[in-house]
Length: 207
Image (tube, rainbow, N blue to C red; front, side):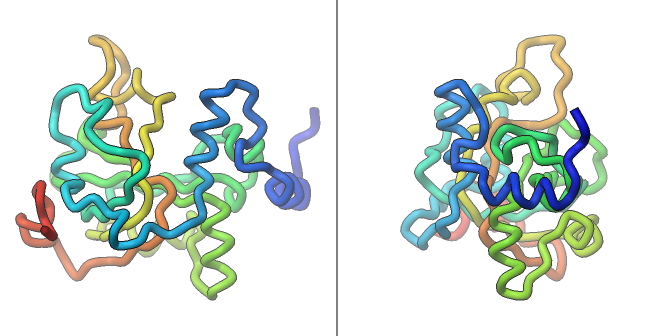
């Protein structure tokens, strides 16, 4: 099969339903959560969710609630194009795939087992573009990499990554993240002037 062109990707994404092109019931339900377009209200935000609380060790399967939103602050260790996924009907071009932003509490450690993944979806990216805001992966990498940021969005338990997250993986697995929990999709973000005070990255901050 020939690789899709940019024009093909644009059409595919425009016609891609909220469940994506997934066949399984559980994946279709997960995709629907990934594709949320509403912005969390202040009442939706769980004030107990911080980056420090998200990376706390232990099985965190039921630690948070996917019906809630969160605002977290962290250091951007990496920004990259996400994979070719069913949620976006297997589009290939970077503009039509998620952006993965990897956050950590400690910029001095190059330790991916401490990372929390937060994601910009192509649908939210298009919404921001209509407002004159560039959330392309290239621009976000340039503006965010190596800086402290604050992101807001919906909590998501990306169950497909349980085997790869420190808090839920079995011994001997390849771990590249601290937790399956994500902020996905991101609905707002800002660059901070520097590292936030400790009490803003600890559980209960903002109460």
